[in-house]
Image (cartoon, one colour):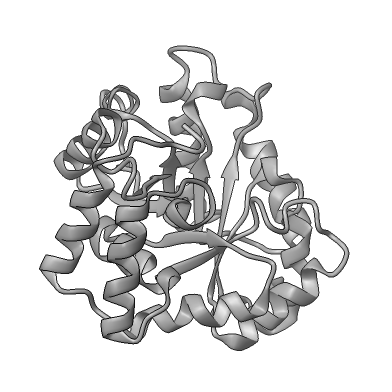
Length: 267
């Protein structure tokens, strides 16, 4: 599954943002990813809110968290998000970033998330940007295991020690990895050997460079891949990824060449 993120391309683009979301939905996007800290949850309200007639067809992810938030703010934050979204529930509610919270407080925050799930205000709960030690901290007291961990994952960081630790913890506890910034080699960090490999695979398969990297992320990470754009033509390109499955040797080549570079955009 691909999730259309509102984090960068339309983060502060409220005017026209709702039209873009509706057009993306019309083209086939069903999973939309937003957050309290993106300051634009309301762009989803008109096209996908409870009264839109489309709510049950959409999968909505939002996230708890700002730098000043504690466990006592979890319920209030979700209620505010639901009001902005004009929804009775979200499909997935994530703890946005463990670095934002007081050391030792993650267990309390997670306990508050668990209560909201049990009350039906969110159908699933998960985490974002959690490293191995954050996951193990939660594991000491959790009653509900996070469904996903949304983390940066591109060929340039999937080999590093941080990601390997994340992967180890997620596999241990049955948490699905949901990648973001998987298109970093196209937009943020150039590496000619990887460019050549991606282009060669794309030419042989009739895929765009974007589709090759998204297919790598989908098949390697296993969970929803979050990617952002404010251009409808790119949405169609993203959705076209599902027509293809990369072969094991193609996945391995992208991973192997990516190891020649160490790069993270966000973490």
